[in-house]
Image 1 (cartoon, helix red, strand yellow):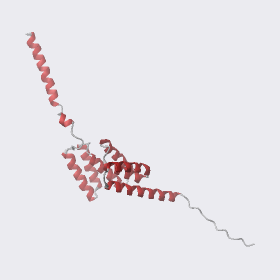
Image 2 (cartoon, helix red, strand yellow):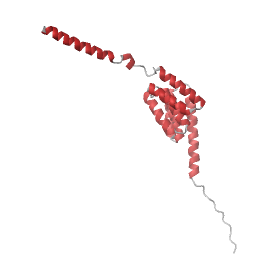
Image 3 (tube, rainbow, N blue to C red):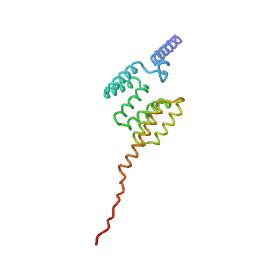
Image 4 (cartoon, rainbow, N blue to C red):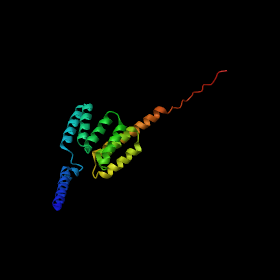
Length: 181
């Protein structure tokens, strides 16, 4: 009888452990590929792109944030939010968002170039040039991102010169007239 009771206890423990294991996520769910974004997140991302194309940045932000809530690994939604931040004149916020995207994928050309453009907007031209070098290294052929970043850096250099001229006082040349005695 004792042996049968021990067997029953072990059976119940095994059954309980089996139920616990069955309730855990399947390995394939936990180990999705980085580019395997949930369909709901992709649909919300598409809604955001449509709203952004119409110029409705608030609706675009809502859709992109919802896409990220559905799947936090949706790098495209993060990059899109950064683009909206740049369009709103918030380069610091854009830089941070691009940084988040680069944490997910350090070689994301769109995120690297976008961060470089935001850095140029902010006046950090040397850091923008470093991002340009990274993008050029990753692009085997001419990428449109390289041209856009080069243009942003050139515009950033112009802005910096204009800003310097605005705060630098121009020398005043005094004309001396001979005094009449």
